[in-house]
Amino acid sequence: MSMVDSEEAARRLGVKLPTLYAYVSRGLISTAKSPDGRRNLFSTEEIDERARRLRSAKNDDIRVATIATAVSTLHEDGPHYRGVPAVTLAVTSSYEEVADLLWKAEPGPWRAASEAVDLAAKSSFDARDRIRLGVVIAGATDPMRADLRPPAVTRSARHLIATAVEALGHGEPPNESNPDPAQVPIAERLSQRLGAPKVTPWLVRAVNAVIVMLADHEVAPSTLAVRLAATTRADCYDALLAGLGTISGPLHGSASDVARRLLEDAEKRGVERALGETLRWQGSFPGFGYSLNIEGDPRFTAMLPFFNALATPRQQKVLQEVLARTEDQGMPRPNVNLAIGAIAYAARLAPEAGETLFTIARMCGWVAHYLEELEQPPRRFRTRTSYLRGG
Image (cartoon, rainbow, N blue to C red; front, top):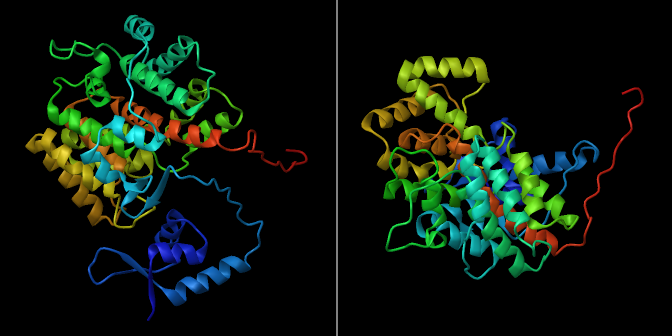
């Protein structure tokens, strides 16, 4: 029997990898392991038959909009940023270095707007609104915000991300050997503002790994919102506000906080009861399922060492029991949201820390897509409506 790998199978079907694995999860296409156990293989005959059926289906059944991008692409081993696996960058590069890679930019200072930090310190806003406040004030204090040349956009991007981080609240004061806050890495600044009882080197490494691995994921809903703003030539600050409005939905940026609550509940009341109650109220287990790979999300595996370094033996046991019980039930494998929730659980971060990490991380990818969209003709997105009489 002739076999092909997942990339070739997706190419023959004319679909992306997530769609291919959606077919697998629904039982429409079967898969087998390669001899080395590292890849999924597909029957050529089965794939070609499925492709024939797709071609014969009516064109009106499914309409898919495609955006060409060189920022990132999705593989079985997770997202690749301009050809480099994110799981590799998470342990070899800083958030700032990954930003320069995605933005095709030279390094520059990440300096916050002091006005935003001072105002946030006096407010009772939650983390989500503090981030928005930071972006608004960073834009309001940037007289050159309308300059859309790439170097100017990347300067603005560093300014607004640094401001959003520091608007979360006051961190530890800079030490005498490094008195300039702009020289402190973003991962360290962010670690100081997540509510941890103690900021350790392992926490900073974990935070850096998280925000690197979440920096981009092709054109997710919030990324599309940023690109829509870019096509009207909104400035970088306003475009990222469009992304912030979209990512705040419970089905996007805050999934890891739900997964974290599952682990905390499992420690207090036992794994069986916590899983049962979660299934009852949520209808599924948060932090499980990954459409790109039925073997699970490689980003979860890459983050496990950080969790183990931060967690107590009891917390490690809780996670192991949750994983074992869900596997016994035949549930999907864990994804990156469970990893983030587990790290927040181990480090005893603030309740909204998962959403905060996701939001700061994704700003990096949003800027890359914003820059890419500026290279396209303006106002190129247009949707057609179908009028429903009596609707």
